[in-house]
Length: 276
Image (cartoon, rainbow, N blue to C red; front, side, top):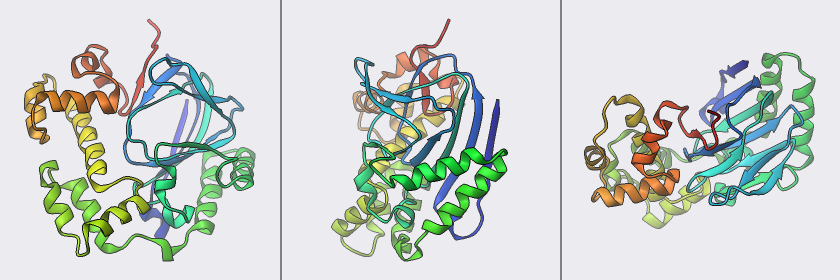
């Protein structure tokens, strides 16, 4: 399997989390659950294999995607297809990073997976064709980086005040939510509007996403798990609140999550029909 990532430089690097290309991926499952991280993705299939999303309850297909699509910030998990011999190219934006490139509010993408026909149209299909023409991952990265540079509008970058709050939420203990948002120099309504514009959800909801991802990180690092301790450390009012939140973001209760050994899988991607 080929898996390559690209290190960006210059102003756009502040807004792009990662660009990666993989080929000949051979999963041991056909459906996987994706846990929200707060990021937005542009995804290209380079293998001509249609991808599907599924109803989270019935796991019946609900939409098919080809060529390219955009996955916005999600408020809980989604279910997607996984395919053998996959080749995909992905641009992962930082949580606040889409507006300078997309030129419309991130809220327009919230809880959505949009096909290329619905966003950017021919622009994404042309970029996909250019990516397919390149032999090496490095050349593909250069093509994508130039496209991002061409779309970048530095008049649409987030303010320093907003970035300060975002950084506080990402780096401070989750119980310091009020301290982080109270440091914003304008009204709370203005802060909420800015979060919807740049991230796609309210500050409180973004903090919930961050907190759940911190829980997943802790679970992966611990040999033995005391759920009540994790609930307390992450600022939940009680264990039932913690279990409800865990189920909301993952679709599993904590005990089931560990029983299925999802804590040993890749973060944020959990197979639902793993073979033997």
